[in-house]
Picture 1 (cartoon, protein in one colour):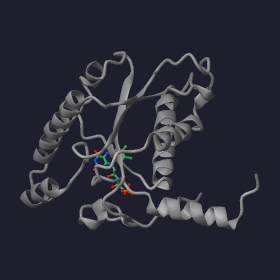
Picture 2 (picture 1 turned 90 degrees about the vertical axis):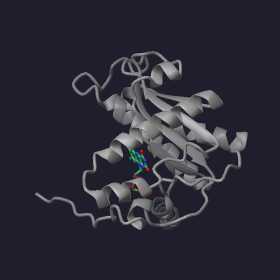
Picture 3 (picture 1 turned 60 degrees about the vertical axis):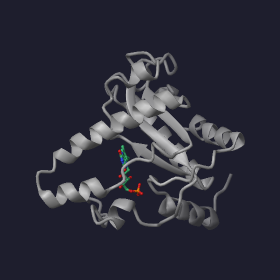
Length: 208
Ligand SMILES: Cc1cc2nc3c(=O)[nH]c(=O)nc-3n(C[C@H](O)[C@H](O)[C@H](O)COP(=O)(O)O)c2cc1C
């Protein structure tokens, strides 16, 4: 396969228009679209081809309600960390998760001791397993955007208790909670930038 300028230009559009999404339509995601998302994860790179990611689709309304409550608790605590009154007020105005509306929920865990890969590449840096799982999430993120879906990564959660709630092995590491669905709107600018919390800064690379 030889890629050309056209592919690069499309990829650049994808990168520019990928957003962290917290405002979702409630329209369900069709099963064939979900299969494409799964395929995207399956082609992700991983240390020693260990494929340590564990994606759990969360459908139970009871479990979703518990996750939402967990997010509210963690978010209230995080808000209180801002002692400055203006920063506190600004923080509490931000919408930082679409857990209540998103039609598809994926909890993502990392298996710290997967059989696959037979340990290759991770003896000195076992954290490469978690990095592999994070890359898989990013690959899913880009693929979702290509399918005109939005993805919102929720980390404002207390990880303790997530394994029990989702009935997965206690030794798996909780990595993040992903909300997916058709977005209410599109933007080339991160929402935190639009809301005046944190603008996108120009990039520079160190040179030695
Ligand atoms: C590891 C990770 C965790 C994140 N957790 C949250 C979160 O809990 N809530 C939220 O609103 N955004 C979260 N985000 C999204 C970031 O706020 C977002 O990526 C950043 O503001 C840039 O916006 P963009 O993704 O639209 O370019 C997370 C992103 C990453 C990579």
